[in-house]
Amino acid sequence: MLSKLQYISQGKTASEQSLNIQKALDQGADWIQLRWKEGAYREKMELSTATRKMCASYHALCIINDHIDIAAAVDADGVHLGLNDETITTARTVLGTEKIIGGTANTLADVLQRIEEQCDYIGLGPFRFTTTKEQLSPVLGLEGYTHILSYLREQSISAPPLYAIGGIETPDIPVLVQTGVYGIALSGLITREPGLIPQLKNLLQ
Image (cartoon, rainbow, N blue to C red; front, side, top):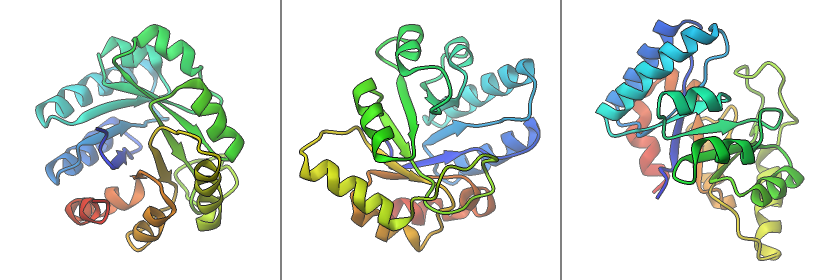
């Protein structure tokens, strides 16, 4: 069963990334998605290798953002792919059936596409404006999640776990859970306050 709380790493440099991931793991994070846009390919490979080892020592999942080849090379637990990245099918071919493959979605159409592609979980967002992503998709808000989750229920469509993502703060979590999302993916909040992780996990039980 997948954890209901994901930490999507932050940090401009490899050392910042590692420090933030270490802090999150120390506070009980059990799912790390390594997302580092700044580094050169070799640096990404080195950070991914180190993160994989760090996560393994805490018995935490290690998911690599974007790079199927790096996920395969470091034997990560899986990969997360944006809508403009390589396909879920390609990831499945390279990584095999045992690895976790997640996909981004912004609209109901995206969610239905991801379901058809048979990814293992869907990161659905953004909930609100966030500075984490340079090219932000249209903001969903609570209404967007309610509409999408209600449609899936009404049509009896079976979906993989859906994670709300994008600018989420602690008070948002209970109301998002009420829409039917499976879990929450957080970046800025955990980076700023890793000590909140136990409380955040309790809100998702």
